[in-house]
Image 1: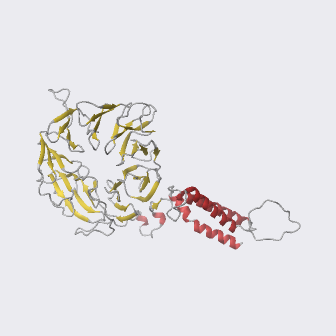
Image 2: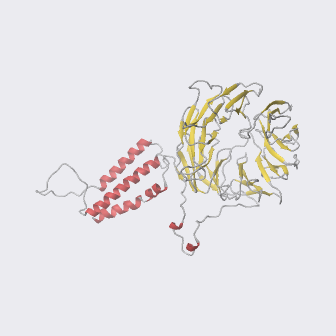
Image 3: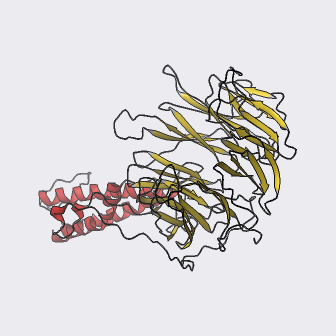
Length: 580
Protein backbone atom coordinates (compact mmCIF):
# COMPACT_ATOMS: atom_id res chain seq x y z
CA UNK A 1 0.00 0.00 0.00
CA UNK A 2 1.40 3.37 -1.04
CA UNK A 3 1.68 5.89 1.83
CA UNK A 4 -0.98 8.56 2.02
CA UNK A 5 -3.72 6.56 0.32
CA UNK A 6 -6.85 6.38 2.52
CA UNK A 7 -8.31 2.97 3.30
CA UNK A 8 -11.98 2.05 3.09
CA UNK A 9 -13.38 -0.31 5.74
CA UNK A 10 -16.24 -2.48 4.45
CA UNK A 11 -18.49 -4.34 6.91
CA UNK A 12 -21.13 -6.83 5.81
CA UNK A 13 -22.76 -10.14 6.60
CA UNK A 14 -19.87 -11.91 4.83
CA UNK A 15 -17.24 -10.29 7.05
CA UNK A 16 -15.10 -7.16 7.30
CA UNK A 17 -12.45 -6.13 4.77
CA UNK A 18 -10.12 -3.22 4.03
CA UNK A 19 -9.81 -1.65 0.60
CA UNK A 20 -6.97 0.60 -0.55
CA UNK A 21 -8.44 3.82 -1.84
CA UNK A 22 -8.21 5.16 -5.39
CA UNK A 23 -6.49 4.80 -7.75
CA UNK A 24 -5.74 1.15 -6.79
CA UNK A 25 -9.08 0.16 -5.21
CA UNK A 26 -7.59 -3.21 -4.23
CA UNK A 27 -7.81 -5.30 -1.05
CA UNK A 28 -5.35 -4.28 1.69
CA UNK A 29 -2.80 -7.12 1.70
CA UNK A 30 -1.93 -6.81 5.40
CA UNK A 31 -5.52 -7.34 6.55
CA UNK A 32 -7.18 -10.75 6.35
CA UNK A 33 -10.95 -10.63 6.04
CA UNK A 34 -12.67 -11.30 9.36
CA UNK A 35 -15.37 -13.77 8.36
CA UNK A 36 -17.30 -13.62 11.61
CA UNK A 37 -20.39 -11.47 12.04
CA UNK A 38 -18.93 -8.05 12.83
CA UNK A 39 -21.14 -5.71 14.86
CA UNK A 40 -19.18 -2.49 14.37
CA UNK A 41 -15.93 -1.11 13.00
CA UNK A 42 -14.14 2.14 13.85
CA UNK A 43 -10.91 4.00 13.11
CA UNK A 44 -8.96 6.14 15.56
CA UNK A 45 -9.15 9.91 15.01
CA UNK A 46 -5.78 10.00 13.18
CA UNK A 47 -6.53 6.79 11.25
CA UNK A 48 -3.52 4.83 12.58
CA UNK A 49 -5.67 2.25 14.42
CA UNK A 50 -8.63 0.13 13.35
CA UNK A 51 -10.96 -1.58 15.80
CA UNK A 52 -13.84 -4.01 15.33
CA UNK A 53 -15.96 -6.32 17.42
CA UNK A 54 -17.59 -9.67 16.70
CA UNK A 55 -18.95 -12.55 18.79
CA UNK A 56 -15.44 -13.48 19.87
CA UNK A 57 -14.52 -10.10 21.32
CA UNK A 58 -12.97 -6.73 20.47
CA UNK A 59 -9.78 -6.35 18.41
CA UNK A 60 -7.61 -3.30 17.69
CA UNK A 61 -4.81 -3.31 15.12
CA UNK A 62 -2.50 -0.91 13.27
CA UNK A 63 -3.95 0.24 9.95
CA UNK A 64 -0.56 0.31 8.21
CA UNK A 65 0.53 -3.32 8.59
CA UNK A 66 -2.32 -5.11 10.36
CA UNK A 67 -0.24 -5.88 13.47
CA UNK A 68 -2.37 -6.39 16.63
CA UNK A 69 -2.43 -3.74 19.36
CA UNK A 70 -4.96 -5.10 21.87
CA UNK A 71 -7.70 -7.69 22.21
CA UNK A 72 -10.52 -7.73 24.76
CA UNK A 73 -12.78 -10.59 25.78
CA UNK A 74 -16.04 -8.65 25.28
CA UNK A 75 -18.26 -10.78 23.00
CA UNK A 76 -21.44 -8.80 23.80
CA UNK A 77 -20.01 -5.46 22.64
CA UNK A 78 -22.34 -3.65 20.25
CA UNK A 79 -20.62 -0.24 19.94
CA UNK A 80 -17.07 0.99 20.37
CA UNK A 81 -15.07 4.19 20.01
CA UNK A 82 -11.42 5.30 20.34
CA UNK A 83 -10.55 8.59 22.10
CA UNK A 84 -8.96 11.46 20.04
CA UNK A 85 -5.35 10.69 21.06
CA UNK A 86 -5.90 6.90 21.00
CA UNK A 87 -5.37 6.54 24.75
CA UNK A 88 -8.79 5.14 25.70
CA UNK A 89 -11.07 2.51 24.17
CA UNK A 90 -14.79 2.83 25.02
CA UNK A 91 -17.17 -0.13 24.59
CA UNK A 92 -20.93 -0.36 25.12
CA UNK A 93 -23.18 -3.40 25.35
CA UNK A 94 -26.96 -3.54 25.94
CA UNK A 95 -27.93 -3.10 29.58
CA UNK A 96 -29.32 -6.33 31.09
CA UNK A 97 -30.38 -7.65 34.50
CA UNK A 98 -29.90 -11.22 35.76
CA UNK A 99 -30.75 -13.19 38.92
CA UNK A 100 -27.12 -13.00 39.97
CA UNK A 101 -27.06 -9.26 39.28
CA UNK A 102 -30.50 -7.69 39.87
CA UNK A 103 -29.01 -4.19 39.58
CA UNK A 104 -27.55 -5.08 36.20
CA UNK A 105 -23.94 -4.99 35.05
CA UNK A 106 -21.99 -1.85 34.29
CA UNK A 107 -22.28 -1.86 30.49
CA UNK A 108 -20.09 1.14 29.55
CA UNK A 109 -16.42 0.27 29.92
CA UNK A 110 -13.30 2.41 29.42
CA UNK A 111 -9.92 0.72 28.86
CA UNK A 112 -6.35 1.92 28.56
CA UNK A 113 -5.76 1.00 24.95
CA UNK A 114 -2.07 0.12 25.21
CA UNK A 115 -2.09 -1.90 28.42
CA UNK A 116 -5.63 -3.23 28.19
CA UNK A 117 -6.32 -2.16 31.83
CA UNK A 118 -9.92 -1.36 32.77
CA UNK A 119 -10.07 2.32 33.78
CA UNK A 120 -13.74 2.54 34.71
CA UNK A 121 -17.03 0.64 34.35
CA UNK A 122 -20.17 2.81 34.27
CA UNK A 123 -23.91 2.37 33.78
CA UNK A 124 -25.37 3.64 30.50
CA UNK A 125 -28.86 2.23 29.96
CA UNK A 126 -29.82 4.28 26.90
CA UNK A 127 -27.98 3.96 23.63
CA UNK A 128 -28.58 7.66 22.91
CA UNK A 129 -25.47 9.70 23.76
CA UNK A 130 -23.79 6.49 24.93
CA UNK A 131 -20.24 7.62 24.18
CA UNK A 132 -18.43 10.24 26.32
CA UNK A 133 -17.15 13.31 24.47
CA UNK A 134 -13.48 14.35 24.62
CA UNK A 135 -11.73 17.57 23.76
CA UNK A 136 -9.11 17.02 21.06
CA UNK A 137 -6.28 17.15 23.61
CA UNK A 138 -8.12 14.70 25.98
CA UNK A 139 -7.81 17.15 28.89
CA UNK A 140 -11.62 17.20 29.21
CA UNK A 141 -14.11 14.33 28.97
CA UNK A 142 -17.86 14.79 29.53
CA UNK A 143 -20.97 12.58 29.67
CA UNK A 144 -24.60 13.18 30.57
CA UNK A 145 -25.96 11.47 33.72
CA UNK A 146 -29.49 12.05 35.05
CA UNK A 147 -29.95 15.46 33.40
CA UNK A 148 -26.57 16.85 34.44
CA UNK A 149 -23.15 16.88 32.85
CA UNK A 150 -20.18 15.16 34.53
CA UNK A 151 -16.72 16.39 33.56
CA UNK A 152 -13.51 14.37 33.96
CA UNK A 153 -9.98 15.72 33.54
CA UNK A 154 -6.89 14.02 32.04
CA UNK A 155 -8.72 10.66 31.69
CA UNK A 156 -9.06 10.31 35.46
CA UNK A 157 -12.48 8.62 35.68
CA UNK A 158 -12.28 7.87 39.42
CA UNK A 159 -13.23 11.45 40.34
CA UNK A 160 -15.67 13.89 38.78
CA UNK A 161 -13.80 17.19 38.32
CA UNK A 162 -16.89 19.35 37.65
CA UNK A 163 -20.65 19.14 37.22
CA UNK A 164 -23.03 21.30 35.21
CA UNK A 165 -26.63 21.21 36.35
CA UNK A 166 -29.03 23.55 34.52
CA UNK A 167 -32.64 22.57 35.28
CA UNK A 168 -33.07 19.42 33.15
CA UNK A 169 -30.31 19.20 30.55
CA UNK A 170 -31.34 16.65 27.91
CA UNK A 171 -28.53 17.07 25.35
CA UNK A 172 -25.12 18.69 24.95
CA UNK A 173 -22.35 19.25 22.40
CA UNK A 174 -18.68 19.72 23.35
CA UNK A 175 -16.67 22.07 21.15
CA UNK A 176 -13.95 20.65 18.87
CA UNK A 177 -10.29 21.58 19.31
CA UNK A 178 -8.28 22.07 22.46
CA UNK A 179 -8.55 24.42 25.45
CA UNK A 180 -10.46 26.40 26.46
CA UNK A 181 -13.27 23.90 25.86
CA UNK A 182 -16.82 25.12 25.44
CA UNK A 183 -20.07 23.22 25.78
CA UNK A 184 -23.57 23.83 24.37
CA UNK A 185 -26.43 22.52 26.53
CA UNK A 186 -30.10 22.10 25.61
CA UNK A 187 -32.95 22.32 28.12
CA UNK A 188 -36.44 21.48 26.78
CA UNK A 189 -39.32 23.79 27.66
CA UNK A 190 -42.20 22.81 29.95
CA UNK A 191 -45.53 24.25 31.15
CA UNK A 192 -45.52 27.13 28.70
CA UNK A 193 -41.87 28.10 29.22
CA UNK A 194 -39.59 28.08 26.17
CA UNK A 195 -36.76 25.67 25.43
CA UNK A 196 -33.25 27.15 25.41
CA UNK A 197 -29.66 26.47 24.43
CA UNK A 198 -26.77 27.99 26.38
CA UNK A 199 -23.03 28.12 25.70
CA UNK A 200 -20.51 27.82 28.55
CA UNK A 201 -16.73 27.85 28.72
CA UNK A 202 -15.22 25.16 30.95
CA UNK A 203 -15.05 25.37 33.95
CA UNK A 204 -16.99 28.68 34.32
CA UNK A 205 -20.46 27.37 35.08
CA UNK A 206 -21.49 29.39 38.17
CA UNK A 207 -23.18 32.77 38.42
CA UNK A 208 -25.96 34.45 36.46
CA UNK A 209 -23.56 35.78 33.80
CA UNK A 210 -21.56 32.58 33.29
CA UNK A 211 -23.23 31.71 29.96
CA UNK A 212 -21.41 32.96 26.86
CA UNK A 213 -24.66 33.00 24.88
CA UNK A 214 -28.29 32.08 25.39
CA UNK A 215 -31.08 31.46 22.86
CA UNK A 216 -34.63 30.54 23.81
CA UNK A 217 -37.36 29.31 21.45
CA UNK A 218 -40.69 27.55 21.36
CA UNK A 219 -41.70 24.64 19.10
CA UNK A 220 -38.91 22.23 20.00
CA UNK A 221 -39.29 18.56 20.89
CA UNK A 222 -35.64 17.86 20.09
CA UNK A 223 -32.59 19.72 18.80
CA UNK A 224 -29.42 19.03 16.82
CA UNK A 225 -26.40 21.15 17.80
CA UNK A 226 -23.42 21.58 15.46
CA UNK A 227 -20.21 23.45 16.33
CA UNK A 228 -18.10 24.87 13.56
CA UNK A 229 -14.51 23.65 13.30
CA UNK A 230 -13.00 26.71 15.00
CA UNK A 231 -15.48 26.42 17.93
CA UNK A 232 -16.71 29.98 17.40
CA UNK A 233 -20.41 29.30 16.83
CA UNK A 234 -23.16 26.68 17.06
CA UNK A 235 -26.08 25.98 14.74
CA UNK A 236 -29.17 24.60 16.49
CA UNK A 237 -31.88 22.87 14.46
CA UNK A 238 -35.03 22.74 16.59
CA UNK A 239 -37.70 20.23 15.53
CA UNK A 240 -41.22 19.32 16.56
CA UNK A 241 -42.65 15.85 15.98
CA UNK A 242 -45.93 17.17 14.57
CA UNK A 243 -46.71 20.20 12.42
CA UNK A 244 -49.93 21.51 13.98
CA UNK A 245 -50.77 23.43 10.80
CA UNK A 246 -50.90 20.14 8.89
CA UNK A 247 -48.56 21.47 6.20
CA UNK A 248 -45.83 18.83 6.65
CA UNK A 249 -45.39 15.19 7.65
CA UNK A 250 -41.95 16.09 9.02
CA UNK A 251 -43.10 18.37 11.82
CA UNK A 252 -41.72 21.90 12.03
CA UNK A 253 -38.08 22.97 12.07
CA UNK A 254 -36.35 26.25 12.85
CA UNK A 255 -32.64 27.10 12.66
CA UNK A 256 -30.88 29.19 15.31
CA UNK A 257 -27.36 30.63 15.47
CA UNK A 258 -25.32 31.19 18.66
CA UNK A 259 -21.78 32.56 18.80
CA UNK A 260 -19.35 32.49 21.72
CA UNK A 261 -19.18 36.31 21.58
CA UNK A 262 -22.85 36.40 22.65
CA UNK A 263 -24.47 37.02 19.27
CA UNK A 264 -27.64 35.01 18.54
CA UNK A 265 -30.03 34.97 15.60
CA UNK A 266 -32.89 33.10 13.98
CA UNK A 267 -31.75 32.12 10.48
CA UNK A 268 -34.36 33.46 8.04
CA UNK A 269 -35.16 30.93 5.30
CA UNK A 270 -36.73 32.00 2.00
CA UNK A 271 -39.07 29.03 1.60
CA UNK A 272 -41.50 27.29 3.92
CA UNK A 273 -41.11 23.61 4.71
CA UNK A 274 -38.75 21.16 6.44
CA UNK A 275 -35.06 21.77 7.11
CA UNK A 276 -33.44 18.65 5.63
CA UNK A 277 -29.78 19.31 6.34
CA UNK A 278 -27.38 21.88 7.76
CA UNK A 279 -23.61 21.72 7.10
CA UNK A 280 -20.75 23.94 8.29
CA UNK A 281 -17.97 24.74 5.86
CA UNK A 282 -14.57 23.49 7.13
CA UNK A 283 -13.45 27.14 6.95
CA UNK A 284 -16.00 27.93 9.74
CA UNK A 285 -16.92 31.15 7.87
CA UNK A 286 -20.17 29.96 6.26
CA UNK A 287 -22.78 27.22 6.33
CA UNK A 288 -25.21 25.62 3.90
CA UNK A 289 -28.90 24.87 4.58
CA UNK A 290 -31.14 22.59 2.49
CA UNK A 291 -34.77 23.43 3.19
CA UNK A 292 -38.32 23.96 1.92
CA UNK A 293 -41.03 21.82 0.38
CA UNK A 294 -39.86 19.91 -2.70
CA UNK A 295 -38.23 21.01 -4.90
CA UNK A 296 -36.01 22.12 -2.02
CA UNK A 297 -33.84 25.24 -1.88
CA UNK A 298 -30.19 25.28 -0.81
CA UNK A 299 -28.56 28.49 0.42
CA UNK A 300 -25.14 29.43 1.79
CA UNK A 301 -25.13 31.90 4.71
CA UNK A 302 -22.28 33.87 6.27
CA UNK A 303 -21.68 34.35 10.01
CA UNK A 304 -24.11 37.28 10.04
CA UNK A 305 -26.77 34.81 8.88
CA UNK A 306 -27.09 36.76 5.61
CA UNK A 307 -27.59 34.69 2.43
CA UNK A 308 -24.51 34.64 0.20
CA UNK A 309 -25.51 32.29 -2.62
CA UNK A 310 -28.80 30.59 -3.47
CA UNK A 311 -28.51 27.36 -5.47
CA UNK A 312 -32.13 27.62 -6.60
CA UNK A 313 -34.48 24.66 -6.25
CA UNK A 314 -34.02 20.97 -7.01
CA UNK A 315 -34.58 17.38 -5.79
CA UNK A 316 -32.18 17.46 -2.83
CA UNK A 317 -32.15 16.79 0.92
CA UNK A 318 -28.47 16.71 1.94
CA UNK A 319 -25.31 18.83 1.75
CA UNK A 320 -21.68 17.64 2.06
CA UNK A 321 -18.59 19.89 2.07
CA UNK A 322 -15.27 18.40 1.01
CA UNK A 323 -12.69 18.16 3.85
CA UNK A 324 -10.81 21.12 2.33
CA UNK A 325 -14.05 23.11 1.95
CA UNK A 326 -13.57 23.92 -1.76
CA UNK A 327 -16.34 21.65 -3.11
CA UNK A 328 -19.95 21.23 -2.01
CA UNK A 329 -22.17 18.30 -2.99
CA UNK A 330 -25.95 18.79 -2.86
CA UNK A 331 -27.71 15.43 -3.06
CA UNK A 332 -31.16 13.88 -3.03
CA UNK A 333 -30.97 10.47 -1.32
CA UNK A 334 -33.48 8.31 0.55
CA UNK A 335 -36.84 8.69 -1.15
CA UNK A 336 -35.31 10.80 -3.96
CA UNK A 337 -33.54 9.53 -7.07
CA UNK A 338 -29.96 10.04 -5.95
CA UNK A 339 -29.09 13.11 -7.99
CA UNK A 340 -25.85 14.81 -6.90
CA UNK A 341 -24.88 18.39 -7.78
CA UNK A 342 -21.15 19.05 -7.38
CA UNK A 343 -20.31 22.75 -6.95
CA UNK A 344 -17.10 24.77 -6.87
CA UNK A 345 -17.94 27.01 -3.88
CA UNK A 346 -15.26 29.60 -4.66
CA UNK A 347 -16.52 30.34 -8.17
CA UNK A 348 -20.09 29.12 -7.47
CA UNK A 349 -19.91 27.06 -10.62
CA UNK A 350 -21.36 23.57 -11.09
CA UNK A 351 -18.70 20.91 -11.77
CA UNK A 352 -20.79 17.80 -12.46
CA UNK A 353 -24.23 16.27 -11.91
CA UNK A 354 -23.90 12.47 -11.44
CA UNK A 355 -26.69 10.19 -10.26
CA UNK A 356 -26.50 7.40 -7.65
CA UNK A 357 -29.96 5.85 -7.20
CA UNK A 358 -30.84 3.90 -4.00
CA UNK A 359 -27.97 5.53 -2.07
CA UNK A 360 -28.29 5.30 1.72
CA UNK A 361 -24.76 6.54 2.61
CA UNK A 362 -22.38 9.21 1.26
CA UNK A 363 -18.94 10.23 2.49
CA UNK A 364 -16.03 12.32 1.24
CA UNK A 365 -12.60 10.72 1.05
CA UNK A 366 -10.04 12.71 3.13
CA UNK A 367 -8.13 13.57 -0.08
CA UNK A 368 -11.01 15.84 -1.22
CA UNK A 369 -10.94 14.21 -4.67
CA UNK A 370 -13.16 11.15 -4.22
CA UNK A 371 -16.43 10.13 -2.60
CA UNK A 372 -18.10 6.84 -1.74
CA UNK A 373 -21.82 6.11 -2.11
CA UNK A 374 -23.34 2.92 -0.70
CA UNK A 375 -26.62 1.05 -0.49
CA UNK A 376 -26.68 -0.59 2.94
CA UNK A 377 -28.93 -2.81 5.03
CA UNK A 378 -31.18 -2.52 6.94
CA UNK A 379 -32.28 0.67 5.11
CA UNK A 380 -32.38 -1.32 1.85
CA UNK A 381 -31.87 -5.05 1.71
CA UNK A 382 -31.60 -5.37 -2.07
CA UNK A 383 -28.91 -4.17 -4.49
CA UNK A 384 -26.43 -3.70 -1.64
CA UNK A 385 -23.02 -2.44 -2.68
CA UNK A 386 -20.86 0.68 -2.99
CA UNK A 387 -19.21 2.90 -5.60
CA UNK A 388 -16.11 5.07 -5.43
CA UNK A 389 -16.37 8.22 -7.56
CA UNK A 390 -14.22 11.11 -8.66
CA UNK A 391 -16.04 14.37 -7.97
CA UNK A 392 -16.23 15.05 -11.71
CA UNK A 393 -18.77 12.21 -11.98
CA UNK A 394 -16.54 9.29 -13.04
CA UNK A 395 -17.12 5.91 -11.34
CA UNK A 396 -13.67 4.48 -10.47
CA UNK A 397 -14.72 1.34 -8.58
CA UNK A 398 -17.95 -0.58 -8.16
CA UNK A 399 -18.73 -3.48 -5.80
CA UNK A 400 -21.98 -5.41 -5.40
CA UNK A 401 -22.39 -7.98 -2.62
CA UNK A 402 -23.04 -11.61 -3.47
CA UNK A 403 -26.60 -12.91 -3.56
CA UNK A 404 -27.91 -13.70 -0.09
CA UNK A 405 -25.48 -11.37 1.69
CA UNK A 406 -25.85 -7.78 2.91
CA UNK A 407 -23.66 -4.69 3.25
CA UNK A 408 -23.93 -2.93 6.62
CA UNK A 409 -21.38 -0.14 6.58
CA UNK A 410 -18.46 1.51 4.75
CA UNK A 411 -16.17 4.16 6.26
CA UNK A 412 -13.03 6.00 5.17
CA UNK A 413 -9.83 6.00 7.19
CA UNK A 414 -9.48 9.49 8.79
CA UNK A 415 -6.31 11.59 8.41
CA UNK A 416 -5.05 14.57 10.45
CA UNK A 417 -5.98 18.03 9.12
CA UNK A 418 -3.60 19.26 6.45
CA UNK A 419 -2.58 15.77 5.27
CA UNK A 420 -4.13 16.44 1.86
CA UNK A 421 -3.78 20.01 0.56
CA UNK A 422 -6.47 21.55 -1.60
CA UNK A 423 -5.98 20.86 -5.32
CA UNK A 424 -7.22 22.92 -8.29
CA UNK A 425 -10.74 21.90 -9.29
CA UNK A 426 -11.16 20.04 -12.57
CA UNK A 427 -14.26 20.35 -14.71
CA UNK A 428 -13.51 17.56 -17.18
CA UNK A 429 -14.53 14.04 -16.10
CA UNK A 430 -11.66 11.91 -14.80
CA UNK A 431 -10.80 8.92 -17.03
CA UNK A 432 -12.53 5.70 -15.99
CA UNK A 433 -13.33 2.34 -17.54
CA UNK A 434 -16.72 2.42 -15.79
CA UNK A 435 -17.65 5.79 -17.29
CA UNK A 436 -19.91 8.42 -15.74
CA UNK A 437 -23.55 8.46 -14.67
CA UNK A 438 -24.60 12.00 -15.41
CA UNK A 439 -28.26 12.56 -14.55
CA UNK A 440 -30.51 12.65 -17.66
CA UNK A 441 -32.56 15.82 -18.18
CA UNK A 442 -35.77 15.50 -16.21
CA UNK A 443 -39.20 16.20 -17.62
CA UNK A 444 -42.30 17.22 -15.75
CA UNK A 445 -44.99 14.60 -15.27
CA UNK A 446 -47.84 14.96 -17.77
CA UNK A 447 -51.18 13.17 -17.43
CA UNK A 448 -51.92 10.66 -20.22
CA UNK A 449 -54.70 12.88 -21.58
CA UNK A 450 -52.20 15.69 -22.28
CA UNK A 451 -49.27 13.67 -23.67
CA UNK A 452 -50.36 13.99 -27.33
CA UNK A 453 -50.45 17.79 -27.00
CA UNK A 454 -47.39 20.07 -27.18
CA UNK A 455 -45.87 20.94 -23.81
CA UNK A 456 -46.84 24.29 -22.36
CA UNK A 457 -45.62 26.18 -19.35
CA UNK A 458 -48.97 25.71 -17.62
CA UNK A 459 -48.63 21.89 -17.76
CA UNK A 460 -45.63 21.94 -15.37
CA UNK A 461 -46.26 21.23 -11.69
CA UNK A 462 -43.63 23.78 -10.69
CA UNK A 463 -40.88 25.93 -12.14
CA UNK A 464 -37.36 25.30 -10.84
CA UNK A 465 -35.75 28.49 -9.59
CA UNK A 466 -32.27 29.18 -11.04
CA UNK A 467 -29.17 29.78 -8.87
CA UNK A 468 -28.73 33.35 -7.68
CA UNK A 469 -25.59 35.09 -6.41
CA UNK A 470 -26.65 37.23 -3.46
CA UNK A 471 -23.31 38.87 -2.74
CA UNK A 472 -23.64 42.67 -2.97
CA UNK A 473 -21.53 44.71 -5.36
CA UNK A 474 -20.88 42.14 -8.07
CA UNK A 475 -21.86 44.52 -10.88
CA UNK A 476 -19.26 47.21 -10.25
CA UNK A 477 -21.01 48.54 -7.13
CA UNK A 478 -18.65 46.92 -4.65
CA UNK A 479 -17.06 50.12 -3.39
CA UNK A 480 -20.39 51.72 -2.42
CA UNK A 481 -22.08 51.12 0.90
CA UNK A 482 -25.74 50.07 1.04
CA UNK A 483 -26.85 53.63 1.95
CA UNK A 484 -24.73 55.25 -0.75
CA UNK A 485 -25.95 52.77 -3.33
CA UNK A 486 -29.57 53.42 -2.35
CA UNK A 487 -29.11 57.21 -2.57
CA UNK A 488 -27.37 56.91 -5.93
CA UNK A 489 -30.25 54.88 -7.34
CA UNK A 490 -32.80 57.35 -5.98
CA UNK A 491 -30.97 60.25 -7.69
CA UNK A 492 -30.79 58.36 -10.97
CA UNK A 493 -34.49 57.43 -10.83
CA UNK A 494 -35.46 61.02 -9.95
CA UNK A 495 -33.37 62.40 -12.81
CA UNK A 496 -34.86 59.92 -15.30
CA UNK A 497 -38.42 60.67 -14.14
CA UNK A 498 -37.77 64.42 -14.43
CA UNK A 499 -36.51 64.08 -17.99
CA UNK A 500 -39.46 61.91 -19.01
CA UNK A 501 -42.08 64.19 -17.49
CA UNK A 502 -40.60 67.52 -18.75
CA UNK A 503 -43.57 69.36 -20.36
CA UNK A 504 -43.41 71.22 -23.69
CA UNK A 505 -43.51 75.03 -23.18
CA UNK A 506 -46.98 76.41 -23.95
CA UNK A 507 -48.01 80.04 -24.34
CA UNK A 508 -50.12 81.32 -21.49
CA UNK A 509 -53.50 82.76 -22.44
CA UNK A 510 -54.79 85.88 -20.76
CA UNK A 511 -57.70 84.01 -19.32
CA UNK A 512 -55.65 81.13 -17.89
CA UNK A 513 -55.32 81.30 -14.12
CA UNK A 514 -51.74 81.36 -12.84
CA UNK A 515 -50.99 79.16 -9.78
CA UNK A 516 -47.86 78.24 -7.84
CA UNK A 517 -48.62 74.49 -7.85
CA UNK A 518 -47.24 72.24 -10.61
CA UNK A 519 -49.23 69.20 -11.73
CA UNK A 520 -48.02 66.23 -13.77
CA UNK A 521 -48.17 66.75 -17.55
CA UNK A 522 -51.41 65.50 -19.00
CA UNK A 523 -51.86 63.75 -22.33
CA UNK A 524 -55.37 65.12 -22.64
CA UNK A 525 -56.82 61.59 -22.47
CA UNK A 526 -57.85 60.57 -18.92
CA UNK A 527 -57.59 56.84 -19.78
CA UNK A 528 -54.01 57.24 -21.07
CA UNK A 529 -53.05 59.29 -17.99
CA UNK A 530 -54.40 56.53 -15.77
CA UNK A 531 -52.34 53.88 -17.63
CA UNK A 532 -49.15 55.97 -17.37
CA UNK A 533 -49.75 56.50 -13.65
CA UNK A 534 -50.16 52.75 -13.07
CA UNK A 535 -47.03 51.98 -15.09
CA UNK A 536 -44.99 54.46 -13.01
CA UNK A 537 -46.30 52.84 -9.84
CA UNK A 538 -45.20 49.39 -11.04
CA UNK A 539 -41.77 50.68 -12.11
CA UNK A 540 -41.28 52.30 -8.69
CA UNK A 541 -42.11 48.96 -7.00
CA UNK A 542 -39.59 47.19 -9.28
CA UNK A 543 -36.92 49.76 -8.34
CA UNK A 544 -37.54 49.04 -4.64
CA UNK A 545 -37.25 45.28 -5.25
CA UNK A 546 -33.94 45.78 -7.06
CA UNK A 547 -32.64 47.79 -4.09
CA UNK A 548 -33.67 45.00 -1.70
CA UNK A 549 -31.93 42.44 -3.94
CA UNK A 550 -28.74 44.51 -4.01
CA UNK A 551 -28.85 44.75 -0.21
CA UNK A 552 -28.72 40.95 0.02
CA UNK A 553 -32.39 40.06 0.53
CA UNK A 554 -33.57 36.78 -1.05
CA UNK A 555 -36.51 37.55 -3.33
CA UNK A 556 -39.46 35.26 -3.94
CA UNK A 557 -40.22 33.82 -7.37
CA UNK A 558 -43.06 36.27 -8.10
CA UNK A 559 -40.81 39.21 -7.12
CA UNK A 560 -38.10 38.05 -9.54
CA UNK A 561 -40.73 37.76 -12.29
CA UNK A 562 -41.76 41.39 -11.62
CA UNK A 563 -38.16 42.56 -12.11
CA UNK A 564 -37.97 40.70 -15.43
CA UNK A 565 -40.99 42.69 -16.70
CA UNK A 566 -39.27 46.08 -16.22
CA UNK A 567 -38.16 46.38 -19.84
CA UNK A 568 -41.65 45.55 -21.10
CA UNK A 569 -43.23 48.17 -18.82
CA UNK A 570 -40.74 50.86 -19.92
CA UNK A 571 -41.57 50.09 -23.55
CA UNK A 572 -45.30 50.38 -22.87
CA UNK A 573 -44.81 53.76 -21.17
CA UNK A 574 -42.69 55.04 -24.04
CA UNK A 575 -45.36 54.04 -26.58
CA UNK A 576 -48.08 55.78 -24.54
CA UNK A 577 -46.01 58.98 -24.21
CA UNK A 578 -45.05 59.03 -27.92
CA UNK A 579 -48.63 58.34 -29.01
CA UNK A 580 -49.88 61.41 -27.16
